[in-house]
Image 1 (cartoon, one colour):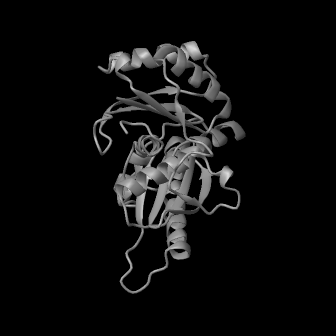
Image 2: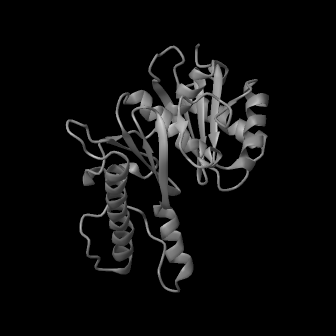
Length: 268
C-alpha cells in the first residue's frame, strides 16, 4: 500500500492506495489540521492511529509520497515517516521526474501541489488540454496542454481566506458557514455574506476559466474544448453550477502516486 500526503496551508490530506493497481485505487483517506506545527512524534502517532481506525495496518505501508506548500513542515513529516514507518518518503520537488515541461519564467515557483494536480490530470485524461481548478486555502487555476506543457496559472483568495478577511477587517460582520447558495439575494447579514462568498467565487471561476481557454486553447476547426477538472476541499460545493467537466477530490494524491511510480516507486 502507498501512503500519499498533501501538506497544505490549512490541512494535511492523506490517502492510501493499492500498490498493485495500474490505476491508483483509493482505499481510505483522512485529514488533520496543519495550521499549527506539530512535532514528528505527534504526526507519526496520528498517522498510525488514523490508518488503524480506517482498517489499514501501518506495517502494510510500502512507500510514502509527499508534496508540501509549507516548507517548515517537511522536516517533521520526514522524521515521522522514518521513525514510525521506517520509510524515507519520496518528496515531489525540483529534480524529480514529472514528465512536465514547465513554462513558468522560474519553474521553481510552481507549487508542488499544482505539479501533482497536473500529473494526476494528465494520467487520468491523456491527450486532452486541461484547465485544473483547485479549491483550497487559495483557489488556483492551472493550464496544461495535451503535450504535457504546464503553461501557467492563476491564484486568487480562496473561500476561507475571503471569509476571514471580512470577519477580521470589519467591525460587525460575523464568521459564517461556507455553504452552497441557491438564491443570490440575502435577507440577513449571514445570508448576504454566504451569497457573496459563493457567487463571488462562481463568477470569478467562470470568468478566469473562459479567459484561460481563449488565451491558451483557442478554438480551431475540429479542436476539442479543454477539459475543466475541479479538485480541493471546496470543489464539491459548486457541482450544481456546471462549471466543470469532472470533479476529482483526490487529484493531488493521485498525482503523487503517479510521480512516485515514475521515480521508481509504487510497485515498479
